[in-house]
Amino acid sequence: MINRKDAGQRVRGPVTVNIDNTAQAYLEVLRDRGIKYFFGNAGTDFAPLIDGFARFAAEGKEYPQPVLVPHEFAAVSMAHGYTMVTGEPQVVMVHVNVGTSNALTGVMNASRANIPLIFTAGRTPITEGEVRGGRNLHIHWAQESYDQASMVREYVKWDYELRCFAQVEKVVDRALNLAMSEPKGPVYLSLPREVLAESHDEFTYTPAGPRLYAKPGPDAEAIRQAARLLGNAENPLVITSMAGKNPAAVGELVKLCESFALPVTIPMSNLYLNFPSDHPMHLGFDPMKFLAQADVILVIEADVPWFPIRAKPNPQAKVIQLGIDPFFSRYPMRSFPADVPLACDPEAGLIALREALEAQRAKGKKEIQDRYERLSREHQAQRAGWKGAADRLKNERPLDMEYVSYCVGQVREAETVLINEYDLRVHQVSLNEPGSFFSSPMSSGLGWCFGAALGVKLARPETVPIVCMGDGTYHFTAATACHFMAQSLPVVVVVFNNQCWNAVKGSVLDLYPEGWAVQKKHFVLCDLKPEPAYEKIVEAFGGYGERVEDPDQIIPALKRAIKAVKQEKRQALLNVICKHP
Image (cartoon, rainbow, N blue to C red):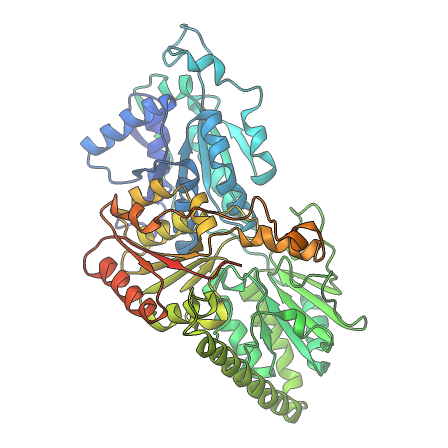
């Protein structure tokens, strides 16, 4: 899939190009298959590839573009962010086993979010002088692993080692095919230095046209069963975390819910904008409030639709689970009920479900209209309550995260993309455009958001990404590596600084509400004090930094930060001092 005028047509016959080594053949295949970026955190194993990129530059070959990222986690998170908004898999390469281990958290995040990545690493040389590329540094002995891929195998769909020059094209194609087939996810390819450095004069490959990857369609009988249940439901409920991964599915969900008055709730694990916040059928971000009275529950791409320890559906309720992999087969244990499983692409499934329900719409028109009006009133009351909460907190000092979130919502513009890692209270922000909001995977590999925002900016340069995170998360981002990258990819970072790992403290309060830590007010391993001046870190990279303590200054400060990105083309960070829990 080279960027060429005949990109819509398959080129007939093989193509032969002049090369120096296997590494250059590998880059030629990546280029032809449409890989735009090669995110790299380099080591001694990269030498043949770096020389290959130099030849590409001399020959005027633009893709793949090498992107140096100073930390492996940030590199994987950038590729994740890029693919998240484009749907196009990119290549990440890290340095042998040590780089793989540093990148592992990012791979876990991509795996649980079904993000297709071609994650690669060098493999340290094993020969001792016999062939080109063999061991010539002391590290080449200590870096050898018995099974380098073992550390990522549980979180990738496929792992393999390039064995020889003759395999290059087939190995790249298999990596792409497996990463992009549903359910999508990362794959791992290790590249031995001796193989990459092996000398060759020519490389013959078959150019590829645009690839079509099949999406599973809905089973007709399962659709009929689901439609019958929903059509007869008095109190239906829709729960979705990831329907918005495909923006077109959001539109189909809106059509379905408008036509049949189906209320939509979004659990904590809302990775995407799944349903417009301002739509009358949006009933907020806590499905557990509605479980008891729901008689039919449609779960769409939600790994954890509710917490069984806190709330469960009515025993008589029927549950429909719709998604590419509705049982989340890569999770070792997950026991949410599925009376009607619908293993299909959400967009196709929602279209089929709406068409199957149309026959029942006429006979239930009055009931549907009454339910729509009732749910609309509840929707309006919810919003009034959220606005009232923000108003009550607007003079609090230190600032309350609820009010800070409200202020972020007030400064959003058409080009804003919100990337959240826990601390933004999403109910305080009107989220209506698919593709304008992303949140961290529930794998909890903290620090994802900063690198992901950089990937979003690379993919969509016209946007202004606003990254919302806690101070605890900021420590996990590989912050200096991300600020380094943000010198050319400016984003706004809002640090909700409560000087604490609140999730850790909250777990103690939850499990031991009358325990020693509570009685003695002694929560070790939770507080992040003394707090650094986070706003000064960004200044070291030419960015705009500001500490915000006054609630009257949060909106002006946000506007100054956005101006820095939009007009001055430099990154910005706001250190917002929030209440310590």
